[in-house]
Image 1 (spheres, helix red, strand yellow):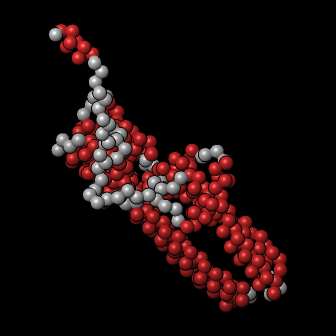
Image 2 (cartoon, helix red, strand yellow):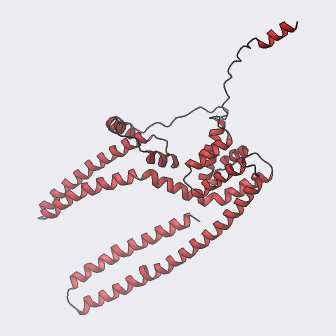
Image 3 (tube, helix red, strand yellow):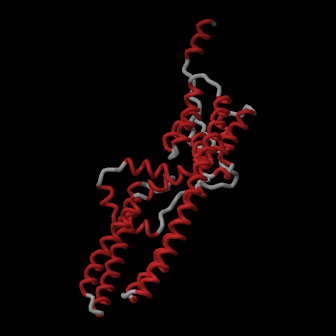
Length: 324
């Protein structure tokens, strides 16, 4: 009996069937993909060989990941080349049209100059804007994250005070769309844990590596460090909520002071200075010579300088107000 029992224990057991891990998605939801637009498909067909033959650009890939752009790096480079080619063709046609129009009016040299500068400038500006697009979008996301980080940390600390698990905290944070890009970052962490089967600490570490916000990156790295060193996350969340609240107040105060300085500058530069300049030029036009030239200068000030300066100040004030 002892020999039979020993043989039974040593007999290899049949392998257990591999059970697929269930994917937790909403009921009725279907997997989706991000197809290329018709313009992107055309650019990919045109420049596929050119972009695939060149070595990959890890900086571009990192910027696109931080910008949450759902397109590969080589596809985006092909799109940049395609749009630049179309912009160059359009500016060449516009330059030739200007050359013909100005030549008929006796301004041949000016037409040649515009026909050369317009395609070169238009093509270069288009390429630079598209090439730096991922970086600009990532910086925009970083500003949006840091705008909402104080309020979102209050939500996180409130859930931590109720002894909610870390993975559940990020899952609930992802559902709160009021927190904007912070909720989007939490949604990517939840995607890694629930769809890709990654543990929560690894998902948070990867989220810290791909987030464009330095402050949110420090917060996620602090979560990993606190959890792996045996510390308690509840005091850490409360401390970070208080820290971000203090920093948010200081940032708001600094932006208000900047807006006050811009308002004083607006009154001086856009209101008082053009008014005095118009009065002085009008007096010179009345009592002195060169009235036609001075009238053209007045038209340039009234129709050009004043509207452009006002739009510039409005843009800066709007940009600062959006960050508050």
